[in-house]
Image (cartoon, rainbow, N blue to C red; front, side, top):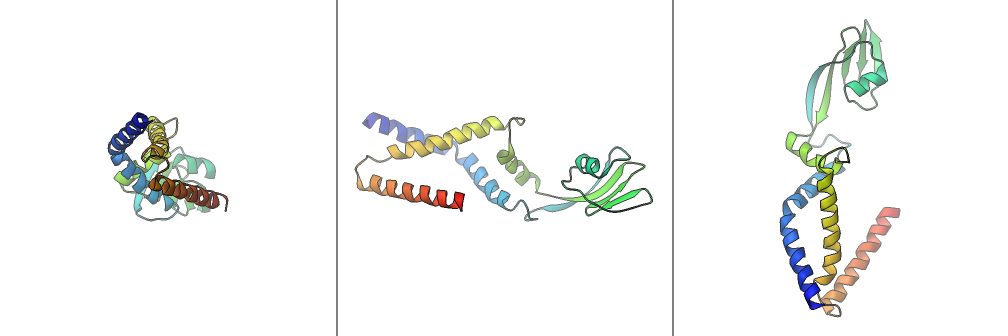
Length: 168
């Protein structure tokens, strides 16, 4: 058991050092993502895009990537919506969007990666590494010692708090 404990401590230590950078990125971008429904850190950008002419409200929203686009009024071959306007005949859309700065946007892509994105392999590796940290934590101190027992108590409290927050 002593060799397993020692090995776990070594793997835990060096994997922690190896993943320090990505853990910092996940931490920062995770905190920023909490505010994704606000304009926190976002810049207003004016865009002009040529899309297909004669689009309806739903198709226009998809074409210029604005979710839940709602036309406020239409007149003289123009559709007006909260973010801008669209010329029905020419297909020119002029609108404003709010975007995160380039670096922060790239960091947030770590969290949003799915199987269609090459970063999903990194997410799987990172998730498995975090699970290893969870498991290897219990080999950091010898069972039966005071610090191990205190660690188990903190684990139980953490699990209860998580369950309460999850189901409340």
